[in-house]
Length: 181
Image (cartoon, rainbow, N blue to C red; front, side):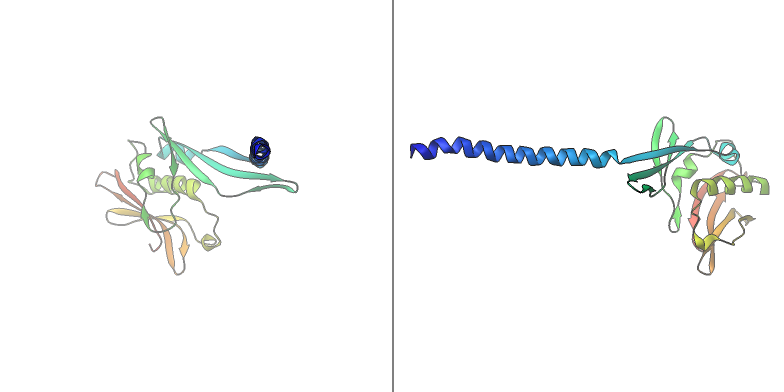
C-alpha cells in the first residue's frame, strides 16, 4: 500500500508533464502558423473619394505566406468617422447602405450629371468587385424623378448598381445597392 501511495505523485508528475508538453507544443505550433499570416492595409484614395466623402477608407487583405509564395484572400474595407474605425459592408444583395451615407461630405449635393459621375466613381472605387458579371456593362448615371440610378454592372438580365434618393436641393437621403435597377 505504501508503494502505491509513493508512486501516485510520480504518476501525477508524469501525467502533468505530458499535458504541459502537449500544451507547450500546441502553443509553439500556433505561434509558427500565426507567423505565416499578416494583413496588408492600404489607404483607399482618389479624387472622387476626396470630393464626395469626409471619411478615410482602408482596404485590409489577409495574406498567408507559404513555401511556394503568398496567397491573399478577401478584401475587407474599413472607414474612419469621428475617430471611430468601422468595417464598411460590401453590398451583395439589394440593401440600404447607411454607413456610406454617414461618410458623405455635409456639403455634397447630387444635382448634376457631374455630381453623379463623381459619386459613381467614388462608390466604384470602394466596391469594385471585378466580377465577370460586370464586364462589358457601361457604367453610367441616369436621373429619375427624385433619385439617380448609378449603373455599375448587371445581374442576370437586369442592371445593378446604386439608387440614390435626394431631396429637392440635391441632399442625399438614402443610398441603396440594387440588383434589379
